[in-house]
Amino acid sequence: MAARLRLSVVVVSHGRPRALARCLRAILQMYCGRFEVIVVADEDGLAAARSVAGGDTFELLHQEKPNI
Image (cartoon, rainbow, N blue to C red; front, side, top):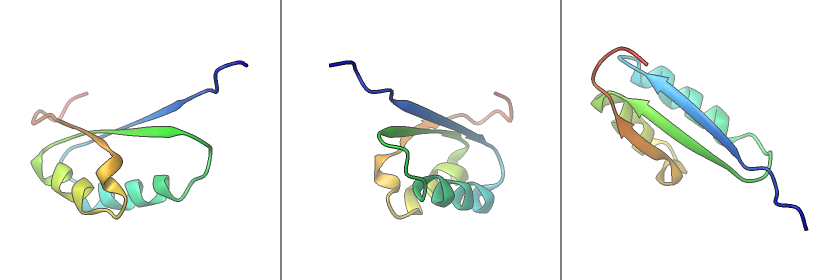
């Protein structure tokens, strides 16, 4: 049996925690099989990501510089 495609969604944010939380809630409403969400953000953004229902499944990476 062939392996199923796994989707990775990477969201980068800096200085916009409310917009980030809104984006992450929308991503969680999608249904496309197995996928992971990787969030790269400043501390306020990571706190917002943790506050999203279902956000305990996100991979969180801290980045303080406003740069990808």
